[in-house]
Image 1 (cartoon, rainbow, N blue to C red):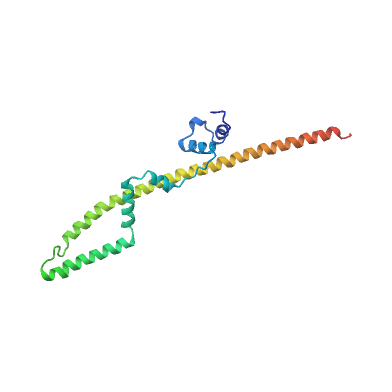
Image 2 (cartoon, rainbow, N blue to C red):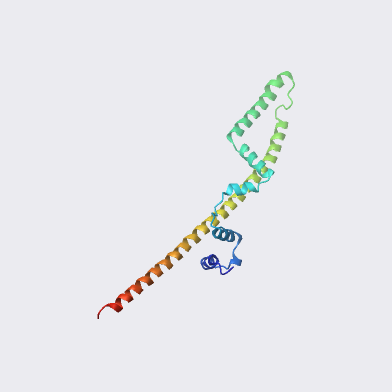
Amino acid sequence: MATNPLHVIVGRLIGKTPAALDAEEQRVLATMQEKRPVSRDAADVADDVATFGDRLSDKVAAVGGSWSFIIAFSAVLVGWMLLNSDVLTHWGHAFDPYPYIFLNLMLSTLAAVQAPIIMMSQNRQAAKDRVAASLDYETNLRAELDILRLHHKLDHAVLARLEALEAKIDALGTRLPS
C-alpha cells in the first residue's frame, strides 16, 4: 500500500503514514483514488441517521418557535379566559374561573414537555453542525491535496523543461567555436 503514488504523495503532504490517517482523511484518500467527488450535503447525511423522535422534535421546535404558534396560542388563551370569565360565568358553568388554576396547570405541563423536546432539536442541530464541519474539513482537505498534487506535477514539468533547455544549451555550447 505504501507503493501507491497517492499514498506517497499524501504521506509527504499530510505527514502521516496511511495507517495513521483518521477516518475523514481515509475517506478523502479513497475518493481521490476512485476519482470521485468527496463533497456531500450535511443535511442529507444527518437526515439519513435521523430517528422518528429526531424528526418529531424538529417539527415541534419548528412549530413552537413560529409566529403562527404564538398568535394561535395567544388567541386560545384569550378565548379560554373570556369563556371562563364572562360567557360561562354568566350561566354559572365556568369550569376554570379566575385565577385559572386548570389553565396554569396546562401551561406548566406544556412548558415541561415542550422545553426538553426543543432541547432535543437543538442537540440534533448541534450534531448536524458537527457533521457539516466534518464534511467541510473533508472537502477542504481534498481541495488542498489536489492543489498540492498539481503543484507537485507542475514542479516536475518545470524541472523536466529546465533540464531539456540545459541539455540544448550544453549541446549548443559544444558546437560553438571558441
